[in-house]
Length: 166
Image (cartoon, rainbow, N blue to C red; front, side, top):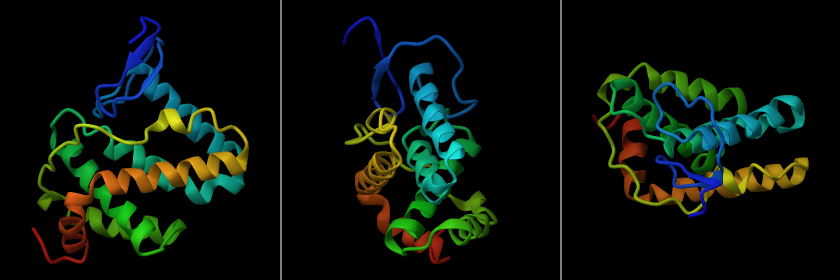
């Protein structure tokens, strides 16, 4: 890896190195955190992209499992559950958010899920997709890839989300 690139310890992306902050408890490089913030800033700037904003947040969150704290463990499970709702159930927008709020009432029983060793698509795929259609397409590709990367946990997440597993 070139000296001017940073490897993200969470998702494995390689992005132009920057100095700066990282998330409070989700493990990332400063470059990855900056890329994520650029992506969500684009979404907030264009109301037409807000319907995919939750996919962006969920994809990034589950790729950065964090510091092992209870909130980091819960974050992965809750964001995976909302990916399930959106990608498998076809629920979006405020309804997907309401589902996640309902899941959060049971977050204490989420176990730590085994972290992925590699991700097929990361925020690096999305960050340069500046046109709205390209951005939307890149986020959809990213979210679907992340959900697929967690395929071994799909049944657990489904069962937990419907209240059948602890």
